[in-house]
Length: 453
Image (cartoon, rainbow, N blue to C red):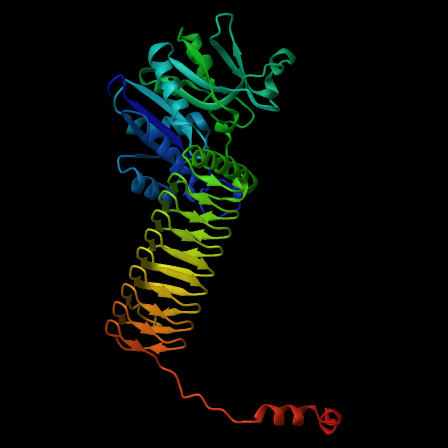
């Protein structure tokens, strides 16, 4: 491990009992991505960085997720929950070299900025042996206090319950994360005792041990929201709110207009181009890319879809995974698409379902049209050619191909291929019985009828 290398020990062994969930705490999602995914992503932005995940027993699901996202992630198991110092010590077998910087962070703290961790690592390389993340909360409450000496170096970390009145008046609090030179970390961790009420080995205790050995300790300040941990469903909602605010600000800074920002919900990977307009109450699920100039109208939901330049979506549209909406295409109100390619200039304006299908360039799909793509066991494809016109309330029974420029009469059930530029319709002959309605009304409105009722 070179001096420039960073290894992040991510503590994720907690059971998260307050979440009251069968799902491991760090796999609960924020902006469509598990908390642990956010942490691993932040580490991946650091140069020469690698992660080591500390999990509890029977947490294979967590380890599998981490490996899937970052295959070089090391996995260590904390068989007994004996505290944060003990958890970090379990990573020793995954960190063979004794150079570089080790970050100790938490899998349930998904709001860290990569710049903060990078600054901690750099300070640890250049100025100190240990760097502790500090913050100044609006309400210091019961956070541990960071006590500095006259030179501004970290002297000790005091838990609130153990702090004196002057120490409780300190506004600089412990954010939990640390950067430690690898050559010292595991020796310090092995010396941490558990002479406390809980009988646990606490990570902050290494600061006092380091000072007693003449090592230098400093504080790197971060934002309060960065250290916001998640231990309950309420905490999860609060972290979601912070993440959504960040994503909205990034979208607007990138040139998108959000008509009512607070009502728009993004996923971690949503991409919006310049001059995109997003209306009220729009939800982006994972995997959505929207190109320049597109308009997403109110109350639409998009997931796993690509929207090309100048396309219009909604209002009240649902664009499901596998959908590709072409340049200038229009998807109107109460339209649902799934695994569908809507080509340039095509229109699906009202009350339709288009699934497992292609709608060719400049084709027009009438209101109430559906592609009947599922027979109860298998899915089938519908191909609608360029410039085709599909009349309202039509059902296209897949597999079926509608040729370029073909015209389908309204109310048709199309079960066979239609050749280009042909007219196809399936409609029973209209029958009219003169005077029938008047006779029917007279019969049902007669006094004798009402008496019997």
